[in-house]
Length: 340
Image (cartoon, rainbow, N blue to C red):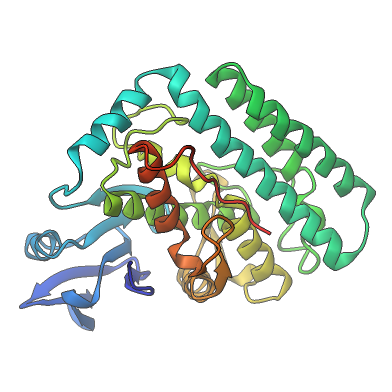
C-alpha cells in the first residue's frame, strides 16, 4: 500500500524544477528554494508554466514518480508517466468493457448512484449538525429518487441526464450550507472554465487534486486511467480517473470546501480575478487549500466494504484495487464507496 504525504505540490508559479544527482530541486528566479531526494516521492504536482528540466523528467520516469503540470489557476495541462507496468489481461478486459456501451452501463450506473447518495449524505449531515431545513430535506428526497432512476437507467445518455439533474438539485442548496463569510463566498450555481466566483474556484481546485490522485491510483493497480466507462474518450482526458472521482466529489471535495469557508480558514483575500472575469486562488490560497487537503488525507475511517481502518488519502487506491478485482472477476460486483 502507498505511503501518505508523498506528493510534492509546488505552488509558486515562477518555480522551475531541475535535477541535482538523485534530488529534485525547486528554484525561483534561479535561486534554489527547496530540494528533496526523489526516493521520498511518488508524485509531483506543479502550478506554473516554467516547467521542468529534461534531466528532472528522466529522474521522475526512472523512479516511477508521476509529474503533473497544472496552470496557476489549477487547470490540468499534462502529466508525465513512465513505462506502464500492469497486467495486460486486466487492461484488455477494461478495454473490452469500455467498447461495449451495454457492459459499461452497469459500472456507470453504480458510480453515479454512489455520487448521488454521497451528495445526499452531505445534505443529511448538514441537517443533523444544524437543524431541520425543509428546502434541503426536499432535495434529499429528490436525490433519493434520482439514485433509484440512475440504477434503472436504460442507456448512458439517460444516465448522464439523470446525473446532470441531480447535480443541479444538489448545488441549488449548496449556498445554504455556507454559514459564514457570505459576502465573499456567495454561490448561485456551479460554473467552470473559468470559475466565476470563489466557491467555484475552490470546488474546481479540489476536483483537480482529486482527479490527479485517482489517476495515480489507477496506474498503481495496472488500469488505464484514460479509458473510462462513464466519461467519453477524449485525447489526453483521464476518463477512468474522472469516473472514479465521482464517488469522492461530495465526501472529500465538497465537504472540505465547506469546512474551509465555515471555519474561516480561507478568506476573500486568497483569490484574484483573471481574464474573462475568472476567479482563481492566489499562491497563499493554494497553500491553504493543499495544507487542508493533506491534513484531511491523514484522517482514518472504516471502509464500508472492507470493514478495515484506512486513511482517507488511500481511498482512491482502495477503490482502484476493488475495481481491478471486479474486472478480473475476483469479485461478483464493484463495491462502490458510500460515505457515512
